[in-house]
Structures are given as structure tokens and as C-alpha cells.
Length: 553
Image (cartoon, rainbow, N blue to C red):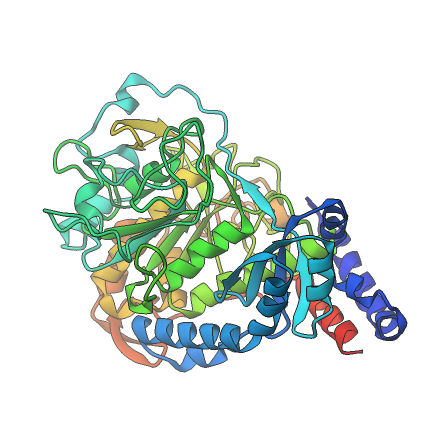
């Protein structure tokens, strides 16, 4: 992956320069359809059937969501706009695919289609005006840093785990804020839902029986022979045998886990959780990731029926990152970056906070390099230890997709404990794991605490993130990533610092009136402040315009 900004700027300039040439060439060339297909897809299709993503020319206009108040209303508006656009534009493409016997799956969260077919199918689809570009189905592999053997005392249960105590979550609980009436979501390797620390918090469990409709979705179409999850499992399961012994189960435990006894492992034990499996044994592709994010926007019954945006979560925790097929040096990679960014934008427009782990490629600077962690729409989390030192493995900023070297995108946004964090595992036990995957769930749990302290904050993503940033323990560094000075806050090592749950809920519940997206709410003085978001981030913007101009010629 590209680790400096110069190369990316060169790519943008080169692509825009070529646009005027393609305006002429595409009108004259009998093979103009090839200009809309990534070379790796063409090469694979020449050898036989291959998977490919079809990015549609028309994408939904969600600008009106900014004027909609309330999380449920925002989610419904976004769902209606997205589904209407897909329904209006995709039939011509799917008809061609059906005629050629090519299998396909439609998405509306971003207007795109996953298809599998040969060169004839690729050519036929690429020749349609409704299609903007065809890219590979990029892949991401979940990896943890080298795990040191935690001391016996760290592996044993505590009254409250050190990481939960450090961020002062128990003090927030003492004020009556435990995440009640808030729903958190995990997009990961799945969840062992009957774990003693998780069963009581599962939204699908009423204390007597389980109902997995609207509470669980499995995006994995193939069973893993070494794991226990079937393909499209109808109930929650976690297939991570080797990576962490239950990576997804561990992350959900840090968000909400509590067994009612000595295992107080979660930030928001009063919240409920839902989940989607987007990886098979730690490996997932863009299509399975997109499938889960679409389901979170409008959860469905098992089998996919009757989607309902009112059942969407307040916050999503994500550890996956696109590694292969998202390289900004390649046309298809840039389009995939655009697809994933639009997906992050649409989740945010629906009023859902999207928490992304920064990655485990530190300690070098500019190692936050994989989407979705690179986007300003993601709330990206670095990892700290029990002394508030940044973990050596925690990826540093700036985001490599900062288009303007003089105004780089702040990443990470925030930090949380991520070293030797004890939580739940898939076999019903508990153990410690380290990684930014362990840090992110602390922030997702904190979002639940903040909303329980001030329900009017539900759906107000900018205000929630700003409140968490401003109430964090502000930490400084001499690493000088992105030109940081030794006293600079925020910085590209810690972001705004390490989260402080008590300070955040106190600010959220303070009796001062603030304006939140048109809604008069009670909250702290920071609650209504807008999140600074960098403009024109991706080279994908330039490429998308280029491709559309070429198509219209």
C-alpha cells in the first residue's frame, strides 16, 4: 500500500489529465468497454469465471438526511433513498446477467452488484450506460499483533477489569448510565451468543427463548471445515478457532459483557447487542463486509425478509480492513476505496456511529492505511496500555488517503486500552488479547453510555464523537507523526487522547441546552459542537468523474 502522499497526488493528476484523452478515445474505440474494467478482472475473466463488483453510475442523493431529526427518522430516510435508487437502476444490469447465466447479488447500501461470470458477462455489463466501473472483490485479512503471555493475575477475573476501571466506566454506572435502551453491533468473526457474559445482553434473548430475527445475520456463504459455523448460520456463532479463539466474541464482551458475577468485562453492561459475521476465520471480502453493513442499516429476519431500519443499532464496531483490491495505485482499487467510503458515509447519514480499529502496523507513522479506518466518516481508535502509553503495534496517522499534504486527515481520532484486555472467548472461557481490535469496542461501549446519559444524542453522530474527543484524557507525544509538536492535541499518535467514560457521561447529562441537528436536547457544552471533517479526501473522486466522462462520450 502507498505510504506517502506524493504518489497519491501524482495518481490524481495523471488520471485527470487523461480524462480529456479518454473523452475522444472512448468514442472511437470498439473496445471502450474495457476502459471500465479493472485489468485484474479482465485477466481473470479471460481464464474463466471470476467474481467482480459492478459499481453503478447513479448513486443515491442523501443530502436531505442532514435536515431529518431523530435516529429512526434518519435511518428510514436513508433506507428509502438508497433502496429506491437501486430498484430504479439495477434491473437492466441484472437482466443481462440473468440472460448470460451469471450469478449475482444486489446491494443498495451502495448501489452495486456482486456478480460471477466469464468474459462475455463482464463485457456485456461493462457496455451498459448504467454501469460506472467493474472492480475486483477486494479482500481483508484480520491479524492481531504478536501476543505476549499475560501474567496470571491479568488472566484471572477481577471485580472490574483494569481497562474498564481505567476509563472510569464504573463511575459512570454509579450515576445510573449503563447503556440502557441502546443497541451496539459487532461486525466480526461472529459471536458465541450463549456465553455467560453475553447471553443476557443479546437483543434476541428474552430470558426464556431466543429469536434471531433482526438480531443476527451471517454473510458467509461457505462453511469453514475447521470451525463450527455453517454457511449462512441461522443463529449466532463464532468461527475464529486460530486467530484469537473467538475474536468477535471478545470484542462484543468488551462492549457489553457481564456474567452477573465476577466477570465484569464490558463497558456498557446495560446495553443490548446484535451482530453480523463478515469474515470466515478472519478473512472477508468487500461483498461480505458490505452485506453486513447493509443489514445493520436495516436488519432483517433470518433469510433476509422484511428489512426494518428502526431495528438498526446506535453504534457499529468494526475490525475488518480492505487490504487486497483497495490499492490507490490501481484503478479498481481506487473505485473500491470510493465504494467503501460511500458506505461509511451512508452509515453516518443514517445516524449510526461507526467505530473502526486503527490497525496493528505501528509504530511507524502513516500506517493507518486500510479502509474503513482511513475515512473521516469512521471513528478510528488507537490502542494504549495500562499506563496510557501508545501500544507499539498501534497504527499511527495521518491517514494515507489525505489528499492535501498541508491538511492531512486526523487519524486516529481517539485511543482506548488495547493491551492485555481480558474478555470472553468462543468456548465459554475468558482470556486476554491485544490489538486495536481490543481498543475499538471500548469506544463503541462508551457511545452506549453517552446515549443512555442523554437519549436525545441518539443519531447525532457529530455531537457524540466531539463529546468523546473533548472529554478524553488528552495525551501528547514526541513521535512527530504528521509534523506533530510535543504538546499538540490532537495528534497522529493518540488522536484526542484516551477515552474517559465518567467525563463523557457527565458532559452528556449536564443540564445545559444545546442544539443537535435541529433538536433541542439536554447535554454538555461540547455536545452540539460539529465534528471537523476534511473535504475532498479521495483520489476516487477524480477517478469516478473521469470514468463517467469517458462513458458519456
